[in-house]
Structure formats: C-alpha cells, structure tokens
Length: 411
Image (cartoon, rainbow, N blue to C red; front, side, top):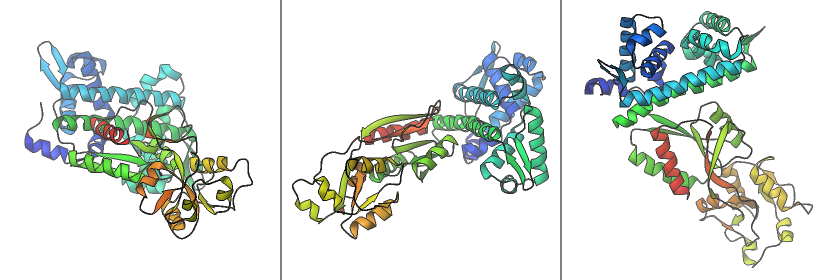
C-alpha cells in the first residue's frame, strides 16, 4: 500500500541516497526483527523496547521510505510487497556490517560481533567514511557541516565501540589506519544496500526517480554505449545516469569503493576475487591507419613494413601495449613509440601523419570515417567486451535493465 499521492510526490522528490541517510541503524534493526519474527511484541522484547516505541519507530521508518512496509492482523505482522523488497536489502546490510566488523578484527572475534554491531551509530560511521574518502579532517568537516571537535569526538567514540585504533595521531592531524580505510569501504557498501532498497520500492511504484553510476572503460566502444544510453533514457526518463570514463585502474578502484555501480567495456585482466567479470563479445585488436595511407596499397603487410613506421601505443602494462610488445617479440621493434591512453591524442597523431596504432574492432567502428584496418594477420589474444561488478552485489531493477540492454546491444 503506497502513501497518498501528495506525500508520495514529496518523498520521491528526494533521491534514494538522501532518503536512506535519514534512516538510523536502530530503525533498521527493529524492522529486520519485526519482518523476521512477524510480531511487534516479540521484536520489542528482543530489542528491549516498549511496544509503543517499536510502533512509533516503524511509523517513522515508513514515512522516510515513503510506503507502508507491513500489514498488521490479529495473527501477526507480515511484510507486504514493499516490505519484502526492503527487508531483503536490510538483511544484506546487516550481513555486510557484521562481516566488516569481523574483517576489522575486533577483540573477541565473531562472538563479539553482535554486541558491537548493536552499539554502532550511523553518525559515527558517517564521520569515518567522510574522513577516509576526503583524506582530510578539514575537508570532512566541510562536507559534513560539523566542527573539527565534533568529528574528533566521534572518532574517539567509534574507537571505544570497536576497541580498535582507527587513526594515527600525527603532528599534521589524524590519519586513518589501513584497517580503518577497509572498514569504511565495507560500511559504505553496506549502507548502499539501504539506498538500493529504496530504489527497488520506487521501481515497483513506477517512479524510477533514482540515479545510477556507470563506469566506462576506454576503448570499449563509445557508439555502443551511446546507443545503450539513448534507448535506456527513452524508457527510464526519470533515472539520472552518470557515466564515468577513466583509466582501467582508476575505474576498478572506484568500483571497489562503491563510487560506480558497475563497469562496461573492455574486461580488465586479473581483477581479483572481489570482482566478477561477465564477457559478452570479443573485440579483436587490429592495426589501423588514416585513410589514404601507403600501406593500404599493399595486398599483404609484413612485419618489416610495420617496422618502417612510427607508432602510437598504449601505456606500459595496458592490454593494448602488451599486444604491441608481443607483435615485435622476435624483432628489435620500431622506433621508440609515443605511449598514451588518450583517444583524442591517438586520433590526432594518426590523422597528421603515417603513424600506426592498435585499436579494438569496437573502437574502429566508431572511427570508420577517418581510419581503416590494414591487411595484416590477426592479432591475439582478442580482448572481450563485458560487464564488471562487485562480487555479491545485487543490482536493483534499474541497474538490471541497463545491464540487460547493454548485453543485448553488445551481442
């Protein structure tokens, strides 16, 4: 059952991130207990609260989320459609929160986790995340609108709760420990489950008043992504889409930090167990030149032909550079090449002379008016276009719609 239309409009005018930030850990804990126990009375007993306090807390949560989550009857209290969606996310939040405490290495280990988890306060966790993300107490103070003294007190309180040192005190201020940085990252991902829960509800309501953040790998085919965006925006006009295009290493860091929801484009190599890559299509490497290049007059290009020309290549360590190096593994190689990951620089250098470069077939598809492939043997191994996401991440329906469309277009 949804709220009255006026209230619905007021609630959906706030994006999921802002609305989720208003919900306390205690509200989530009470809701999880009610949904699991199907009883306000039993939830009140388990949380050591009065039943009226539990009722009031749930009412406030439903107001913040924007919908009714439970149906009450003589036989008990049961999750409705919206409640089931949100409860699934809340369960994931608590699982992630407890795992974060285990990984932090709190004294007492696994047995101490439930007690410490109950004592965690959202405001203190928020301070930790802000200091870690901004790498500065001063900047965190500005972002949160709090004084330095308030944040320092919050940090001390959090250290007392988890019984772990989270910061080093230096002459220049406080510096988060490596364990604190990892804990902040895991708690940020846990909190995003609540945002996703609100997005799930909005999707069922048909409001789609949310936003998603997509990482776009270089050389992934800009025309492919543009085609996906055109169709997605047409079917989801109220969903904000942010496209972030960076180097592979920077995008993977953003994905792990929860700053992008998933990455599309060339699949990275050796991503680790915390990420999952789904291949969709191969996009072989080809050697490209400007139209009108002398090599296009040849029926077959040899290694010696390639050695006589200057090259624009990828940065050391990149898949494109590895392909270039393997091409000349048995020869001295051409003149020292220009190394860059900038597509704009590559395009300019190719257009202004007789240089050669390696592109994927998806990249060349975007550049057919200016460049073309030379007749040379296939280069291998062929990279793949696909989607990279965090292991264990459960996409909202909006995310799933975007990824499904990308899969269909890439096939």
